[in-house]
Image (tube, rainbow, N blue to C red; front, side):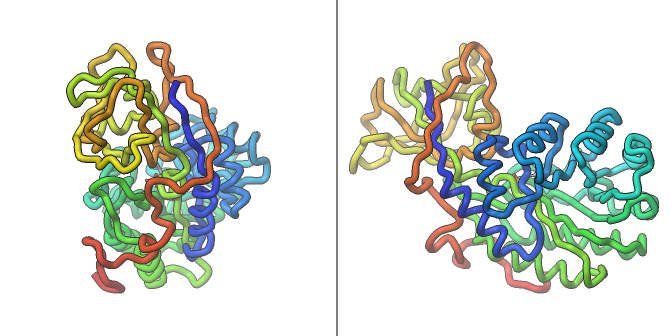
Length: 381
Ligand SMILES: *Cc1c(COP(=O)(O)O)cnc(C)c1O
């Protein structure tokens, strides 16, 4: 069976970076990787707030971390779920993007007066690899009435958005914050929290984003310039950036057919994104020493389904053979979390290791790179 490698030191380093460098509060987006061990170590590094999006995530985090602050940032919930979250698990922070949802929250919490409500705005996803633009969020043009009504119910009111996952330039946040500005001005409401969501990038083959400090400084400067009170808080909800470096995966080559490798994990397992959205993860052949990686391969997963195919290309030495092992990197976010039991696969072993992940946005040159495309200078666009 495939083996998942955990790198606690890499997740700790990521958490410390956000806690120390982001001038505001960082919520961990649990869906990226709900592993209890990861949740605990992020918490121990100062990530005390968690972005949860289902009642199962609420129960999970509450169970593991009784003192954590849970923020229910899914804008469409059932009343039963809101009620359980509020009354049984102490959830006070909810997001919404419609009048309907506001009324649900009011009813389900018994018209509570201690709510923090974040109105989710629709923003562009054009700078991100994975769109989160079409499903949730209210258009700025239509947000005035909702903001005014939410202000009446909320003890603390926020505005939130999500620029899409793996945002390749800080400009994504600057543009989104400009929409926040328009919404605030048009509704003339007091806003206590601005939550810039997730989307902070990690490093993958062909995807080398600018350093995170450029994202943070762009966000900080644009935030400071918003028409909000001096005491307003800045929040973010990283998932990928906190989790990506935490896991890699060791798979076995069960068979080689030309440049197609039949491996023991795939589209219904840890490699969902590699199959379904063609994501290219970094790879290395275990024990290949100095053999140069020169050959392009694609992978087939273990299930009987044609769709269980990862096109790559994944670059490995020319002499890969049946029985070899391959490490696939950067699977801590949306990798480990995607595993199913389809066709009898999905079991996995896991081990903690202390070597470095295949790439890190938190070490060496990557900590402050301005030599990459997409870096823009601020404060003005
Ligand atoms: C998925 C999600 C996140 C995390 O996004 P990343 O791109 O992994 O950082 C944060 N907030 C919300 C509301 C989400 O749906």
